[in-house]
Length: 591
Image (tube, helix red, strand yellow):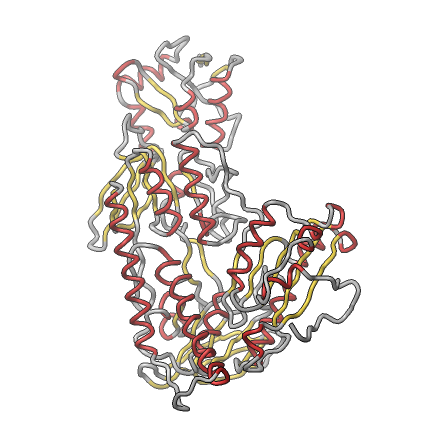
């Protein structure tokens, strides 16, 4: 077999896509590297190197025989050229699952997933006059619930969660207000339907606003399920089953995650998830929350806060991945405020005893430490045991995108690029990245600026702040104590901490010294603050400012030299003196 010689004149753009040209002039066709089985010799030059890199991206095999034919052909393989001219080469490609890539595309960018990250990227791309399409489709929950444009955060996540958390805080504020002189009838009731209707009205306004924003920016939006069917090609299927094919130069996967089910009898028939809770058309009544994730504890918190009987069933630890010192303090606070915890048990069966809204369910559970079986009756069972990436049914195997087979997560490089060079991914579906809405938004915008505006800034996944909206809010940024010890060694970190009592809580005389502040410092780096943790009211507001300081490399000395604002909760971080190592008392008295 003869071989082809690669010259420095190779088109780098085509090579980065993992394709190259076959033919001349207007008769050129783009061929995917895996479909060519001819030998080639690589002359020294950037073009040859890029082609080899392009082949590796597509095949993950740098040594596989391949060929290259460009407009000026040298020592061409006669059989290959003959097959090309007769059209049998293209047919063979299609039989092997590789379609001929079109010369021009319907869109510059197609975004699969209309959540916060996908929408941010789509609107950013439109700013640079790119032709953009967004495909978004919500597969209904087992109970039949779905929602509008905007993704999890807007519809069934951050937004309704924070609003219902606020409803619970207002209930506590009503109780506190009596000590501040407010008088009203003893019995104060909460109306679930009024709350959910108000929340859903606001969510609906956001859905509409997103659609208007896309239209104004000339981004094409289709309420259709996007699925790859070949190189640079997706199939969009709407709710009526109508299918359309679209091509694009680049694709962005931003499909997010959906709640996981237990896989036990009765879970999908009778249980709900966070995808159902925020629009539940009746008060859930006595509720069992299964799980120890932040979703589980947040939902348990606001359900109890509006006056419901709530039990949390925990398999092992609370808030896996978060600082366990803080997680245990959250659990203690919730138990002290009337939330029941069943630890080291998992449900094995859910049965309906009585129909209704709500009805009555019997939950049979088994110990994780032995054979003990317990039963309990509840009106509602809320599953919050984790979430699964929506990547397994979008045709990634048809275009060769690698996913983690266990988790469904997509590994990407530091530019959010998958192993297929023209396909990118952002958000909760990324492997080993934070599952936070603002992270997806930032990553999407920066990606688009790199692709279309010549920018070079990459998303920084370090020192990202977050807040868990449990009854006692938890704000965090940087290392957990466990991770800091593992990374730097216990002897190389110093933990400063203190309890505190918000002034607003003193008059009602509640929860003295339940709030807690902790910073973790790297002794070997001038006591630079590498971990920030706070339990208390408005924890998110407090954490956001300190996160900016951590980005700037703040040290313990600089914190000490900062004058606090009095009397606020955040000032505690300017007066921390007690170290964990010392074992001294951290309880505060007075202001």
